[in-house]
Image (cartoon, rainbow, N blue to C red; front, side):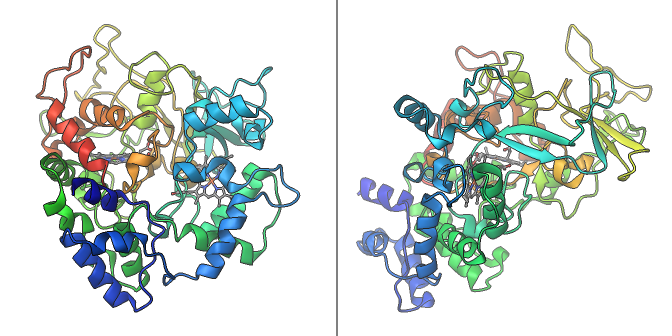
Length: 488
Ligand code: HEC
Ligand code: HEC
């Protein structure tokens, strides 16, 4: 029985609801979620027309898998590998390189550093693809001494993982920095950037979008998508996982509870990608000093001084310090998947406007710290001199959303990812900093959760064998969380 429930919970669903109508379908699925009965399996195998235009979706599937004429031979599926839940994982890159180094995947355009004398594909082997971005008009790149060194074409390159296109019916906006609002816009940009193609016909873009919008990780994801498509406000849609509770193993149940307490504030609601706790959200976006240094503004009227929160009510992008951890990885910091791969080393200057005359922030700010303890020094008011990552940071590997908005509050901030089907899409984070779910949970336990006092998870647990870092979670809690993430 457990096995059967497992199959149902994680069933990779290109599943349609019965034609008899959505209402019945919803009731049926909710029943199936609540009771361990035979129809659950029937639902998972019965694939009939959904509310989405399936003819278009079938056409889109072919287009997704076939290179457009006149391009460099790459299709969407070259990177969004169908057998791997439409991500690009290191094992696939290694196998393809061994089998056929002439595969269109290995185009140096974005699969390697185009200026390298000999291609090594070392980033691609970590699942990373080169993404080129044009700096907003109010930003420059600067060197360690603060001199402007923006390239003439104003372009920067970053290395990013390949996200899945599953559940994209409910995860707009797209790209790790949210720079594309629709799947059509996204597909057109992908054809130009990755396949060196031109303008794609509207019907082809619509077909690809229809195909992607029909890719779900589970019947639960599709259930949520269908309700959204029928106009049910997202806040009113219940998290279907709560209905699963009676079917979960004790470990998965404990994992669900831990998820609800410490992950749900950000990966929240029925879409698993909404920041539902504004207190956590606001805490993650500190205000910067008005002196242009890029250091965080502290309220020094209280002891100890606390960071002033920026007022960003409509900002749904957050910096949880992953790019900073990746930068530490460049110095050999353990547990980061890209440690042995050179990542870019940027600093940015932000200005009030496109004339670039009045600077507002240098990010990351030049580190001011005690070389022995690595602790930040304090300013004349007793506040620590730290940038938005609250740690001495020498460079940025990826400015994130800030390269789209030109807003320093968006420095190293990324789109809130949805977590359904997450067990199938390793490595994790925008730059594949975590190789496995266990590495990811270790990163949260050691370096992230503690920073949010309202999550009530200080570093009370001792380091694990072989590690020197105290933990927010116990080994049991980590196992429980992973057990739940595996069926999410
Ligand atoms: C060379 C590899 C490559 C190819 C080919 C490619 N993509 Fe992507 N795709 C990526 C990368 C890398 C990202 C993330 C880029 C970023 O966030 O800056 C991405 C992001 C996406 C996203 C955003 C998903 C999300 O949740 O935000 C969608 C959708 C997508 N691609 C669809 C397509 C389609 C459709 C095609 C074909 C027309 C395509 N891709 C071709 C590498 C590729
Ligand atoms: C303060 C908000 C916040 C909290 C709390 C939080 N996350 Fe995240 N999570 C994010 C952001 C932002 C990202 C994207 C970061 C990036 O890619 O650099 C992310 C990324 C992830 C990813 C990678 C997704 C992918 O497709 O690569 C996983 C998995 C994840 N979080 C799981 C968790 C778990 C498990 C918890 C609870 C222990 C948790 N998160 C708590 C904000 C949060």
